[in-house]
Image 1 (cartoon, rainbow, N blue to C red):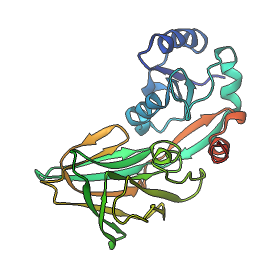
Image 2: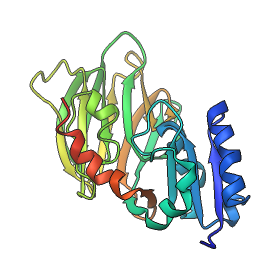
Image 3: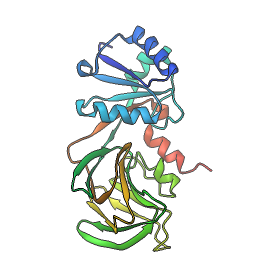
Image 4: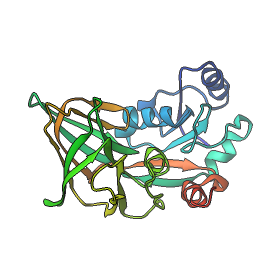
Length: 254
């Protein structure tokens, strides 16, 4: 094919062995000099790859060698050249989180799946939620709340009984986690360009952490979230394994 391809693998023995096999087929190339990345592992490793190398702007083709592989293709090294040639792109736009801590620090992070706020102690979190500067919930008493992208809507969001969002739709899912009050609130589907503000009430007595994918910030008092206006990543999928189709199929699973 002539493309320079960097092979990245999770630290598991299976992924490391597969990396050696593919490097024999595709050659050695560091990510900074590559035109395409191949990631070997599970969804967690795919997210690590996007966070570490997303700024390069390279398409990423994942192959499942882990426990969860929703963002991955099947591992079949013998046909890798042909599969890369016909792989179809899915463009993802991450969320940008800005969290302010009790000590006054401001921490920014990206999330390709979701931003989640969770109580840190046995006591329920008390949260105030605004959308585009307008207060929508004066007080949500809960274990937490999360904002999920379409690509992440089948992960933690779905486990918390949030909706599955079709890929390509310009919406995000705001989903409560074990909401106690208001009891009937089950979340909201918002425009992807909405800016969501979450204020932690009584933060000293009821501490809350904020997590953007796997990056956790503890003792937060305020979090703002919006879709990134500059950053995108492109995942590559086999035609029979296209991400949009998988998200559609997931809605019909029992």
